[in-house]
Length: 224
Image (tube, rainbow, N blue to C red; front, side, top):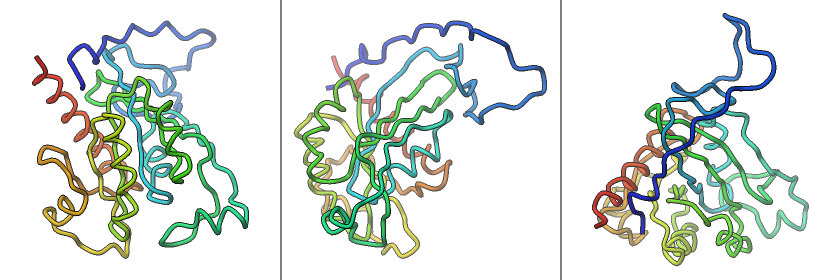
């Protein structure tokens, strides 16, 4: 259960050591309110968020799309043996996450989200328990071409007691599903956010994360 106390104030970052960038120079691209490498002084809170979903759903892509710092990816080339076991239901995949993906984004100028992408293979589900420690919530990516592939993912989030929002990652050949159909198929609670996104598009991916944050804040304010 998320409570108000979970959104702890974030300490002011130390001044960067070493030479400073000269006026007019350009550095890593970052979201408004962030300096790119260092957490902005306007930040007053931070939250750990999991990005979860089945293999090939777009977790690594989403983190790379929104991260204001150079993301950390633990991608490894899939072997022939692994490809037979881990092949996604749609398309092809030459690499796969073997540990975690990591990125950071500042939203609303004062809240930093640390994004941890989980491996999509079913055999890595037990490792989620460690990754979930300290997390306030999760964004679950769904492939509308294979909704059933997400059943175990959502079930594991429920077992962990981790609040989540669902983002339907739209692919070019995705079928259209009505909101009510998806909610019924995924057995979602009425207050669970369900949004559309394109993991390659920064705006829609950020909006999906904001939907999760709003859900967490609402739950925190309703907690006695």
